[in-house]
Length: 95
Picture 1 (cartoon, helix red, strand yellow):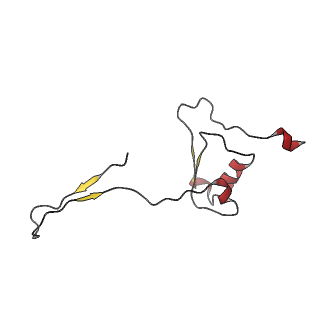
Picture 2 (tube, rainbow, N blue to C red; picture 1 turned 180 degrees about the vertical axis):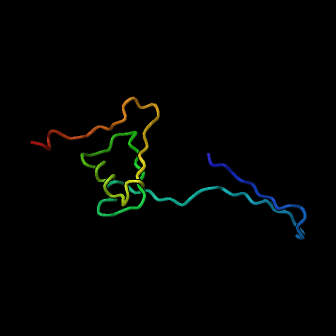
Picture 3 (cartoon, one colour; picture 1 turned 90 degrees about the horizontal axis):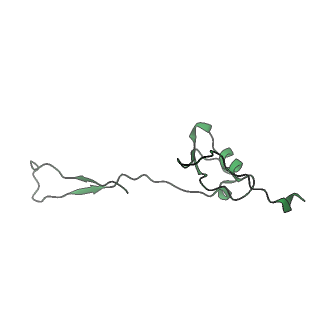
């Protein structure tokens, strides 16, 4: 839920009408899939690995395209017993 901030000017203004401003504290953000990030360098990276990544090597791609390791954030669920993700490799590809 986004908090709403209501702003009402004080009564000592010289205006002939009263108004109220409602402000929503949001920030512009963009999302990019791991596949779309290939070949790009990005300043900030946030990765949700509560669900394993789709293909072998995708997590490496996501982590390696950040310009600074301090700007990488990884989302893990608090109730996760294991703080790891599956490495998905299809045996058919290795033959």
